[in-house]
Image (cartoon, rainbow, N blue to C red; front, side, top):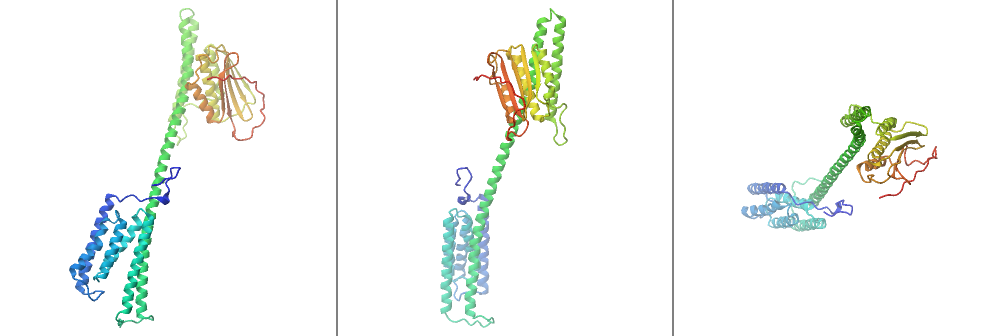
Length: 445
């Protein structure tokens, strides 16, 4: 089948598939049924002596003509054009020999014309072959009518209508044959168009099924990425803090029992918080959207930033947390993403920066909320540039159409700044309520 450049088939050039084995078996049974009907009708007509012509051939010849006109129907869908030509020629031959039965041969010719219209792949050939057969048949009818008109006059002893009997006979023959051939032609066209539309519907259904599979696969991948980000953010932060506290407890265990006890207590509290967040995450995953359950614990937001700051301080950092602008509610998804960005930034400081001071800032702008984490550590040295943490932050910010800056600061330290729109990002921007001190980030690989 021809296809357009977009991959969509050109249905005007559609070609019907070859008949299936089941369809070919049905053709055999149909041809057998028509042949038996033709033989039966020939025997009945001969037995009654109800011949349309005065000098019919022998019964044996009539039976052979009946078989000859119906046998090609066995392969009518495999070779529709050949069957049409053969049946048409045999039909005229039987008419020439003035066989007794004309009903079954007419049925066979109707099926042949119909099949050529419904199954011939070349539509130009299908059209003109049927037109040619119809023209030949009408020419044969005209020849028969001329013989009828110039022949001996018929008595028409029972005629009682208002028309001349001869004129009525001619009009009757013309009308019958017109309806017969137009019906055969139109039935073939309708069958072809119906098959093409069925193929188009099946193609559309297959495209829809494939599209649904792609959407489902994409949704699954997106969900897996979201779960991976959440697990990374929850586990990495708290485990990093616990690792630092456990190391501190090990170093001072023999020297300062009180300090070791405080460090281990912090490990215990951090583990408890981590388990709580994991339970909340699992509760969200197990939540049933039908009953509105939302897990055991609400998702963290900007109000819980002080807890992150306290955890970072427990790891030995000097953390300053400041908020600028008029505090206002922001969408839950934006608040969660801002929280996770700060969490991941603090985790990276604890794990990689070897810093002493960290500054956490939250700015409420007119159309956005901005979180910023800076430190005085080693900048880009030892920092992950392609790990899951930075990738997760970029993905979270990109979901909301925001902007993420992450890289070494001039001089020393590292900066992470995420700007998350709280309104429609396509709306015209308004002047920022508060001027922000720029902290440039150096380009890095």
